[in-house]
Length: 498
Ligand SMILES: Cc1cc2nc3c(=O)[nH]c(=O)nc-3n(C[C@H](O)[C@H](O)[C@H](O)COP(=O)(O)OP(=O)(O)OC[C@H]3O[C@@H](n4cnc5c(N)ncnc54)[C@H](O)[C@@H]3O)c2cc1C
Image 1: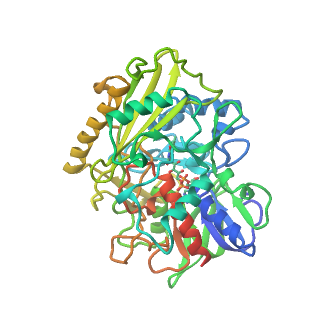
Image 2: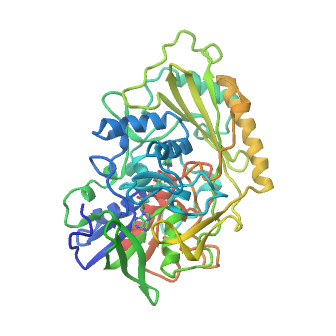
Image 3: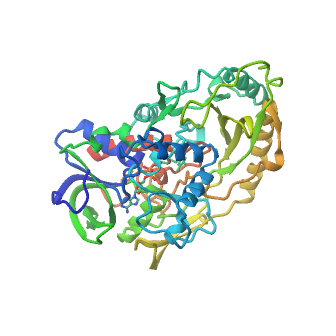
């Protein structure tokens, strides 16, 4: 790991912008397949824990672990973001580039009034050091179109890299009765689509805590002294240099000193999240018609239920304790079922003195892909770091609102099977709150103005400029986005090598 205060080689074969899960997957896949390729990963944020790039739950710093657990116990991504900002006494007007961690996107000076839940990571490892790590698979119409390869094989590779496991909470005796109750309430056509343990990116630690996968687990060599793969931090990529449809390098700015350097590249991959990837392309004068257009996000309905042991046939069963630093004691998945049921449940189980034995009833509902929902980039105004100011345009269509009502019925049926459900407390979260935004640099089979890149992730008109991350997903997801984007990053790495 280095900063721009130390001299870097003038050229790398591959430069990846962003050290989150998607940037590190592309870099790792290239690194493993070719020993003669030099790789630079560029990250604007600083270290957030002692072992850079590891998930906060693994941090040797007790305070960081405890802060993660406390915020995660709120069991809502938006509360994690807002709680984290409040802890640091950040406000929309007080954010400065010295601040590390998760930040509401508006705090960087963007106009997020129509997408107020949106957030950005400003740290090594991106959101991948903060995430809950739920990794359900996309299904049916959610699966992106096939590229050169085999969707299932790329999905399996992504699951391996993220260490996706469905057994991490298997010791919880409530798993069987809870899942039985959910399956009776929501019958599914196949076992594959009926209620089941939530796949989680992580492995069980010795104390039962889930050691969640962070970018350091995906690509350990990137965080060691390795000549073939370098990580430069505190370096904001401000421009992708290009000429006649060929990316030639990047301009990097040292966040502290403001000093800029140009580094040449054989290929560039931008994996800077679904908001900042299109922003960087725009800033670099790469402006396909579809850039930022068709911003999509599943609607999130919150809710929770106190488990009734009588109702689920678990009378007398002992509720397990939380392992040290682990915010959950169980996690369940109620999958979507295609167009018939475009909604999934992510059900997180907890125990606390204040609220008792509870299961969070979070439901995600896919929404229509519409060009009205979009990011716009200013020609003149800039954000807090000097890149084009982003305005998000987002609303729900009548069909979205119907689906949300439908999902409420599914949520009610599931919750009432487990305990007494307080429907009034089940609120639709603000747009952006899922942190799973897609479509802003979407892939497509043809250069017809509705996509930014081809099915390999190559930006139209370029052979050596690629985009990766949730923004490339062209479908409307019900599921959490990371496993889907990670599978596409595996595909994109192959294209980079080709
Ligand atoms: C609290 C929380 C819970 C979550 N839970 C889940 C979950 O259960 N399941 C799930 O699927 N997803 C979840 N997510 C979302 C998940 O973390 C993201 O989908 C994932 O991290 C996206 O990976 P990425 O690499 O594309 O982007 P990111 O992880 O956002 O990384 C992008 C990186 O690019 C850097 N960057 C941006 N612009 C520049 C630039 N110009 N120059 C240099 N660097 C730049 C950023 O600093 C950042 O580090 C959660 C997120 C949070 C915060």
